[in-house]
Image (cartoon, rainbow over all chains, first blue to last red; front, side, top):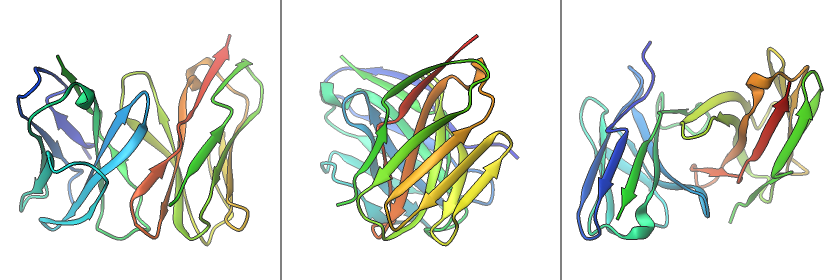
Length: 114
Length: 111
């Protein structure tokens, strides 16, 4: 069974631009979560989607948004990029929205904002 | 607010040594705790998931324990190998249902 895939793997953008990251969960998984990883803050939760609905959200500004499609694939969008948005963005999938389920992570998208 | 702490931040051991990584959390009302491994520049690999009702889980040379009442978990690695070198992260899932991560322990196993 294929794992979680994320595209693109690397991105370079300039301040003020916007970016869209994509995540395809493990086949059969319906819950997708997004995390930001930086050297200073570590791993921080962005949001979680289940059945095309956002069911949980972290403490990030409104510039960070996401959505989930009917096939469970998810996209994350960051508008008006800032230098501090440079990070590894990780997507995780789990079977359903239940808290007991194991989360499986993708390889991440490395975003560099210049 | 849940806080997760991992000590030590870095650990260097000779090959073959048994070692223990520590994780503590402030709010004991958790659903589960998950240990991950992260290689440089890569994503997270799930190692073990311990539900709140469990005391330990084992996978190969890895054994994780959970003491929910004291807010502690340990990851025991037996007979360490150079390939075990990585950053180990623990994460708890509590009432907010989001994973809260520690900053990790960077492990180096020297041949």
